[in-house]
Image (cartoon, rainbow, N blue to C red; front, side, top):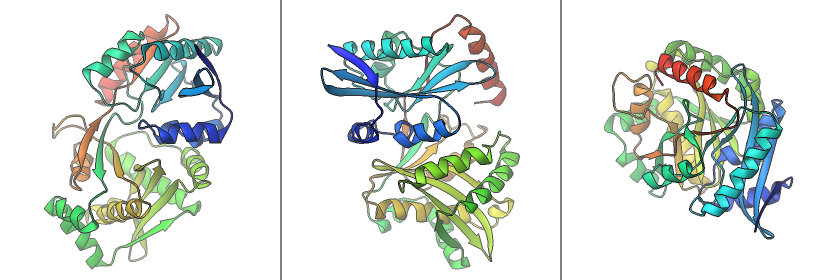
Length: 338
Protein backbone atom coordinates (compact mmCIF):
# COMPACT_ATOMS: atom_id res chain seq x y z
CA UNK A 1 0.00 0.00 0.00
CA UNK A 2 2.75 2.43 0.99
CA UNK A 3 6.10 2.87 -0.71
CA UNK A 4 8.97 5.33 -0.42
CA UNK A 5 11.50 6.59 -2.91
CA UNK A 6 13.93 9.45 -3.38
CA UNK A 7 12.47 12.50 -5.11
CA UNK A 8 14.94 14.19 -7.45
CA UNK A 9 12.51 16.51 -9.22
CA UNK A 10 12.41 20.02 -7.76
CA UNK A 11 8.98 20.84 -9.17
CA UNK A 12 7.39 17.69 -7.73
CA UNK A 13 8.93 18.41 -4.35
CA UNK A 14 8.04 22.08 -4.21
CA UNK A 15 4.48 21.57 -5.45
CA UNK A 16 3.80 19.15 -2.60
CA UNK A 17 5.46 21.24 0.11
CA UNK A 18 3.84 24.52 -0.96
CA UNK A 19 0.38 22.92 -1.06
CA UNK A 20 0.64 21.73 2.54
CA UNK A 21 -0.45 23.76 5.60
CA UNK A 22 2.78 22.43 7.18
CA UNK A 23 4.91 24.22 4.55
CA UNK A 24 8.18 25.60 5.89
CA UNK A 25 11.33 26.94 4.26
CA UNK A 26 13.13 24.29 6.34
CA UNK A 27 11.64 21.63 4.06
CA UNK A 28 12.05 23.66 0.87
CA UNK A 29 14.15 22.37 -2.00
CA UNK A 30 16.53 25.29 -1.51
CA UNK A 31 17.12 24.48 2.15
CA UNK A 32 18.34 21.09 1.00
CA UNK A 33 20.47 22.67 -1.74
CA UNK A 34 21.98 25.05 0.78
CA UNK A 35 23.08 22.12 2.95
CA UNK A 36 24.30 20.16 -0.03
CA UNK A 37 26.58 23.08 -0.94
CA UNK A 38 27.93 23.00 2.61
CA UNK A 39 29.00 19.40 1.98
CA UNK A 40 26.14 17.59 3.71
CA UNK A 41 24.36 14.62 2.14
CA UNK A 42 20.67 15.32 1.54
CA UNK A 43 17.95 12.69 1.19
CA UNK A 44 14.56 13.82 -0.11
CA UNK A 45 12.22 10.98 0.75
CA UNK A 46 8.74 10.75 -0.69
CA UNK A 47 5.94 8.58 0.70
CA UNK A 48 3.60 7.23 -1.96
CA UNK A 49 0.17 5.63 -1.72
CA UNK A 50 0.09 3.86 -5.03
CA UNK A 51 1.18 6.56 -7.50
CA UNK A 52 0.09 9.46 -5.31
CA UNK A 53 2.66 11.42 -3.31
CA UNK A 54 1.38 11.48 0.28
CA UNK A 55 4.30 12.79 2.32
CA UNK A 56 7.84 14.12 2.15
CA UNK A 57 10.78 14.35 4.51
CA UNK A 58 14.10 16.05 3.77
CA UNK A 59 16.89 14.40 5.75
CA UNK A 60 20.22 16.17 6.15
CA UNK A 61 23.20 14.14 7.29
CA UNK A 62 25.36 16.00 9.79
CA UNK A 63 28.80 14.84 10.94
CA UNK A 64 29.55 16.50 14.28
CA UNK A 65 32.10 15.80 17.00
CA UNK A 66 29.45 14.36 19.30
CA UNK A 67 27.91 12.08 16.63
CA UNK A 68 26.87 11.57 13.03
CA UNK A 69 23.13 12.01 12.71
CA UNK A 70 20.34 13.05 10.35
CA UNK A 71 18.07 16.00 10.96
CA UNK A 72 14.68 16.81 9.47
CA UNK A 73 13.75 20.38 10.48
CA UNK A 74 10.22 21.49 9.69
CA UNK A 75 9.23 17.95 8.82
CA UNK A 76 8.41 15.35 7.84
CA UNK A 77 5.37 16.80 6.06
CA UNK A 78 2.79 14.07 6.35
CA UNK A 79 -0.72 13.31 7.59
CA UNK A 80 0.26 12.73 11.21
CA UNK A 81 -3.18 11.34 12.05
CA UNK A 82 -2.70 8.47 9.58
CA UNK A 83 -0.82 6.02 11.78
CA UNK A 84 -0.22 3.57 8.93
CA UNK A 85 1.37 6.27 6.75
CA UNK A 86 3.51 7.61 9.59
CA UNK A 87 4.71 4.15 10.60
CA UNK A 88 5.63 3.27 7.03
CA UNK A 89 7.48 6.54 6.49
CA UNK A 90 9.51 6.22 9.66
CA UNK A 91 10.46 2.69 8.73
CA UNK A 92 11.99 4.15 5.55
CA UNK A 93 13.69 6.93 7.53
CA UNK A 94 15.16 4.35 9.88
CA UNK A 95 16.49 2.37 6.90
CA UNK A 96 18.28 5.42 5.47
CA UNK A 97 19.71 6.28 8.90
CA UNK A 98 21.11 2.79 9.35
CA UNK A 99 22.58 2.69 5.87
CA UNK A 100 24.34 6.00 6.60
CA UNK A 101 25.57 4.65 9.96
CA UNK A 102 24.02 7.52 11.91
CA UNK A 103 23.40 7.46 15.65
CA UNK A 104 19.96 9.09 15.59
CA UNK A 105 17.49 11.10 13.49
CA UNK A 106 16.25 14.42 14.88
CA UNK A 107 12.97 15.86 13.62
CA UNK A 108 10.97 18.99 14.42
CA UNK A 109 7.66 18.85 12.53
CA UNK A 110 5.95 22.07 11.50
CA UNK A 111 2.94 21.00 13.53
CA UNK A 112 1.38 22.76 16.52
CA UNK A 113 2.25 21.36 19.92
CA UNK A 114 -0.78 19.67 21.48
CA UNK A 115 -1.23 16.63 23.73
CA UNK A 116 -2.54 14.73 20.69
CA UNK A 117 0.41 15.62 18.43
CA UNK A 118 2.90 14.75 21.18
CA UNK A 119 1.19 11.39 21.61
CA UNK A 120 1.49 10.72 17.87
CA UNK A 121 5.27 11.13 18.03
CA UNK A 122 5.47 8.83 21.02
CA UNK A 123 3.49 6.16 19.18
CA UNK A 124 6.16 6.04 16.48
CA UNK A 125 8.86 5.48 19.11
CA UNK A 126 10.29 8.99 19.16
CA UNK A 127 11.62 10.59 22.34
CA UNK A 128 11.91 14.29 23.19
CA UNK A 129 15.33 15.56 22.13
CA UNK A 130 17.63 17.16 24.69
CA UNK A 131 18.25 20.12 22.33
CA UNK A 132 16.04 22.18 20.05
CA UNK A 133 16.10 22.03 16.25
CA UNK A 134 15.55 25.56 14.94
CA UNK A 135 12.90 27.78 16.52
CA UNK A 136 10.19 25.87 18.39
CA UNK A 137 8.44 28.83 20.04
CA UNK A 138 7.88 31.66 17.58
CA UNK A 139 6.05 34.98 17.35
CA UNK A 140 3.81 35.48 14.30
CA UNK A 141 2.00 38.52 12.93
CA UNK A 142 -1.17 38.23 10.85
CA UNK A 143 -0.72 40.43 7.77
CA UNK A 144 -4.37 40.67 6.74
CA UNK A 145 -5.03 44.05 8.45
CA UNK A 146 -4.05 47.27 6.66
CA UNK A 147 -0.72 48.94 7.38
CA UNK A 148 -2.50 51.57 9.46
CA UNK A 149 -4.29 48.89 11.48
CA UNK A 150 -1.03 47.00 12.06
CA UNK A 151 0.60 50.16 13.38
CA UNK A 152 -2.33 50.87 15.66
CA UNK A 153 -2.20 47.35 17.12
CA UNK A 154 1.47 47.67 18.08
CA UNK A 155 2.76 48.50 21.54
CA UNK A 156 2.83 52.28 21.93
CA UNK A 157 6.60 52.39 22.39
CA UNK A 158 7.15 50.27 19.27
CA UNK A 159 4.97 52.54 17.16
CA UNK A 160 6.81 55.57 18.58
CA UNK A 161 10.22 54.01 17.79
CA UNK A 162 9.24 53.42 14.14
CA UNK A 163 8.09 57.02 13.78
CA UNK A 164 11.18 58.33 15.55
CA UNK A 165 13.46 56.41 13.18
CA UNK A 166 11.71 57.96 10.19
CA UNK A 167 11.91 61.44 11.72
CA UNK A 168 15.65 61.02 12.34
CA UNK A 169 16.17 60.18 8.70
CA UNK A 170 17.03 56.52 9.11
CA UNK A 171 17.24 54.88 5.68
CA UNK A 172 16.05 51.32 5.06
CA UNK A 173 17.30 49.72 1.84
CA UNK A 174 16.51 46.31 0.38
CA UNK A 175 19.49 44.54 -1.08
CA UNK A 176 20.47 41.35 -2.88
CA UNK A 177 24.13 42.35 -3.07
CA UNK A 178 26.38 39.58 -1.82
CA UNK A 179 28.87 42.04 -0.35
CA UNK A 180 26.18 43.02 2.15
CA UNK A 181 26.39 39.51 3.62
CA UNK A 182 29.85 40.53 4.86
CA UNK A 183 28.19 43.44 6.67
CA UNK A 184 25.67 41.04 8.20
CA UNK A 185 28.46 38.78 9.35
CA UNK A 186 30.40 41.65 10.92
CA UNK A 187 27.37 43.02 12.78
CA UNK A 188 26.35 39.52 13.85
CA UNK A 189 29.73 39.23 15.59
CA UNK A 190 28.87 42.29 17.65
CA UNK A 191 25.53 40.78 18.67
CA UNK A 192 27.19 37.47 19.52
CA UNK A 193 29.62 39.27 21.80
CA UNK A 194 26.82 41.17 23.54
CA UNK A 195 24.56 38.13 24.00
CA UNK A 196 27.20 35.43 24.38
CA UNK A 197 26.34 32.96 21.61
CA UNK A 198 28.30 31.28 18.83
CA UNK A 199 27.79 33.17 15.52
CA UNK A 200 27.27 31.55 12.14
CA UNK A 201 30.24 31.51 9.80
CA UNK A 202 30.46 33.86 6.84
CA UNK A 203 30.39 30.85 4.50
CA UNK A 204 27.18 29.59 6.13
CA UNK A 205 25.42 32.93 5.69
CA UNK A 206 26.69 33.56 2.15
CA UNK A 207 25.81 30.06 0.92
CA UNK A 208 22.30 30.32 2.30
CA UNK A 209 21.85 33.76 0.77
CA UNK A 210 23.09 32.68 -2.67
CA UNK A 211 20.87 29.59 -2.70
CA UNK A 212 17.59 31.32 -1.84
CA UNK A 213 18.45 34.41 -3.87
CA UNK A 214 18.25 32.40 -7.10
CA UNK A 215 14.47 32.02 -6.63
CA UNK A 216 13.78 35.48 -5.14
CA UNK A 217 13.11 33.87 -1.76
CA UNK A 218 15.43 36.05 0.30
CA UNK A 219 16.10 39.74 0.79
CA UNK A 220 18.53 41.73 2.89
CA UNK A 221 17.13 44.73 4.73
CA UNK A 222 19.84 47.25 5.62
CA UNK A 223 19.32 50.23 7.93
CA UNK A 224 21.71 53.19 7.74
CA UNK A 225 21.98 56.44 9.66
CA UNK A 226 24.25 59.22 8.42
CA UNK A 227 25.94 56.76 6.09
CA UNK A 228 26.65 54.11 8.73
CA UNK A 229 24.92 50.71 8.70
CA UNK A 230 23.35 50.09 12.11
CA UNK A 231 21.28 46.96 11.46
CA UNK A 232 20.84 44.36 8.76
CA UNK A 233 18.78 41.17 8.42
CA UNK A 234 17.92 38.22 6.20
CA UNK A 235 14.21 37.91 5.49
CA UNK A 236 13.15 34.63 3.88
CA UNK A 237 9.99 34.51 1.78
CA UNK A 238 8.48 31.05 1.40
CA UNK A 239 4.92 29.74 0.96
CA UNK A 240 2.62 32.22 2.76
CA UNK A 241 5.20 33.40 5.24
CA UNK A 242 8.04 35.89 5.59
CA UNK A 243 10.60 34.85 8.20
CA UNK A 244 12.98 37.12 10.11
CA UNK A 245 15.84 34.65 10.13
CA UNK A 246 19.32 36.09 10.77
CA UNK A 247 20.26 39.58 11.82
CA UNK A 248 23.06 41.74 13.08
CA UNK A 249 23.18 45.17 14.66
CA UNK A 250 25.76 47.72 15.71
CA UNK A 251 26.51 48.52 19.32
CA UNK A 252 25.14 51.98 18.51
CA UNK A 253 21.66 50.64 17.71
CA UNK A 254 20.46 51.30 21.27
CA UNK A 255 20.66 55.04 20.56
CA UNK A 256 18.89 54.93 17.16
CA UNK A 257 15.75 52.75 16.72
CA UNK A 258 17.12 51.20 13.52
CA UNK A 259 15.84 47.67 14.20
CA UNK A 260 12.27 48.94 14.56
CA UNK A 261 12.46 50.61 11.14
CA UNK A 262 13.92 47.44 9.64
CA UNK A 263 11.09 45.24 10.93
CA UNK A 264 8.42 47.64 9.75
CA UNK A 265 9.80 47.79 6.20
CA UNK A 266 10.14 43.98 6.12
CA UNK A 267 6.50 43.66 7.23
CA UNK A 268 5.42 46.05 4.47
CA UNK A 269 7.41 44.06 1.89
CA UNK A 270 5.73 40.84 3.04
CA UNK A 271 2.34 42.52 2.58
CA UNK A 272 3.40 43.76 -0.87
CA UNK A 273 4.19 40.17 -1.83
CA UNK A 274 0.70 39.11 -0.76
CA UNK A 275 1.86 36.90 2.11
CA UNK A 276 -0.40 36.11 5.04
CA UNK A 277 2.08 35.94 7.94
CA UNK A 278 5.24 37.58 9.19
CA UNK A 279 7.21 35.22 11.41
CA UNK A 280 9.57 36.94 13.84
CA UNK A 281 11.08 33.48 14.49
CA UNK A 282 12.28 32.37 17.90
CA UNK A 283 11.27 33.86 21.24
CA UNK A 284 11.69 32.78 24.85
CA UNK A 285 9.25 30.07 25.92
CA UNK A 286 8.74 31.79 29.28
CA UNK A 287 7.97 35.29 30.52
CA UNK A 288 10.89 35.13 32.94
CA UNK A 289 12.62 38.55 32.63
CA UNK A 290 15.96 36.84 33.38
CA UNK A 291 15.71 34.52 30.37
CA UNK A 292 18.64 35.07 28.00
CA UNK A 293 16.20 35.93 25.18
CA UNK A 294 13.89 38.11 27.27
CA UNK A 295 15.02 41.34 25.58
CA UNK A 296 14.60 40.17 22.00
CA UNK A 297 11.25 38.57 22.94
CA UNK A 298 9.97 41.87 24.31
CA UNK A 299 11.13 43.60 21.11
CA UNK A 300 9.31 41.16 18.82
CA UNK A 301 6.08 41.11 20.83
CA UNK A 302 5.89 44.89 20.58
CA UNK A 303 4.84 44.62 16.92
CA UNK A 304 1.67 42.73 17.84
CA UNK A 305 0.89 39.15 16.91
CA UNK A 306 0.58 35.85 18.67
CA UNK A 307 2.71 33.02 19.99
CA UNK A 308 3.04 29.75 18.08
CA UNK A 309 4.40 26.62 19.77
CA UNK A 310 5.53 23.94 17.33
CA UNK A 311 6.22 20.39 18.35
CA UNK A 312 9.61 20.30 20.07
CA UNK A 313 12.47 18.35 18.52
CA UNK A 314 12.23 14.58 18.90
CA UNK A 315 14.78 11.86 18.25
CA UNK A 316 14.56 8.49 16.59
CA UNK A 317 17.26 6.41 18.28
CA UNK A 318 19.31 4.28 15.87
CA UNK A 319 22.34 3.22 17.96
CA UNK A 320 22.82 2.58 21.67
CA UNK A 321 25.59 5.18 22.01
CA UNK A 322 22.87 7.79 21.44
CA UNK A 323 22.53 7.98 25.22
CA UNK A 324 26.04 9.42 25.52
CA UNK A 325 24.94 12.16 23.12
CA UNK A 326 21.75 12.63 25.13
CA UNK A 327 23.74 13.17 28.33
CA UNK A 328 26.19 15.56 26.64
CA UNK A 329 23.46 17.69 25.02
CA UNK A 330 21.41 17.81 28.21
CA UNK A 331 24.42 19.16 30.06
CA UNK A 332 25.17 21.67 27.31
CA UNK A 333 21.57 22.90 27.29
CA UNK A 334 21.69 23.57 31.03
CA UNK A 335 25.03 25.35 30.80
CA UNK A 336 23.74 27.58 27.99
CA UNK A 337 20.44 28.17 29.83
CA UNK A 338 18.42 27.18 26.75
